[in-house]
Length: 86
Image (cartoon, rainbow, N blue to C red; front, side, top):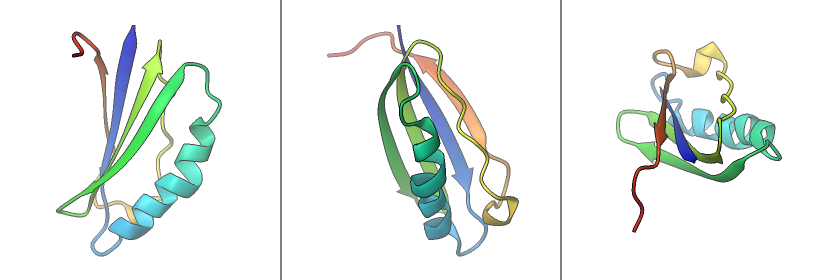
């Protein structure tokens, strides 16, 4: 069973680059070597949003919360189970 875990945050005004750097420098190293981790992908989007998608064989490990000063609102998290791949 493959699970995609999505972690999405809206940065405080003007702090999207700092939030993305925090993900690269703090969150991702905390996930490396976790059992079942297959892949990670980091995205940015308009509106100061940063999205991290991780793929897992089995139950995902939670991504930590960034420092509150970097956030414009609380982090959103979703997990999805793969149903079909072509």
